[in-house]
Amino acid sequence: MAEQRARPLSPHLSVWRWGPGMTVSILHRITGGALAVAGLAVLTWWLLALAGDREGYATFNSAATHWLGLVVLIGLTWAFFQHLLSGIRHLFMDTGEAFELGVNRTSAIATIVGSVILTAALWFYLLGGVK
Image (cartoon, rainbow, N blue to C red; front, side, top):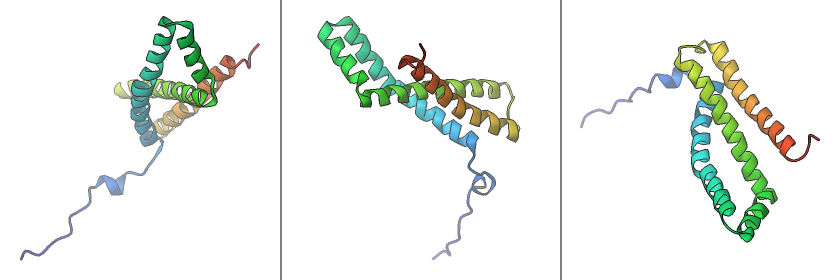
């Protein structure tokens, strides 16, 4: 029998540490999927409710204004802003910019903070916080 040797680990496991850039990259994929599936489902339901009768729209409106509906809509809003800001970040990176560790880290954190601030500001406005 051949003697078993331990296989070497991939070098990236010892070189890379988890950081904001990796988090934002993964969030970009997750938010894109969420917007494609859940966002499209909510948008389709809303458009069908608009095209239908008053009862259909009342049902949609009731679901959308329920606390769980608001959680879904706020989550989709955050996913939209996170995906948008992350996409803008990637656009700059595609030109060869923002690969320096400090700039990359700062831009990654800025996308997360920015998406939370934009979501909070929009929902504060939508829920009547600004008169």
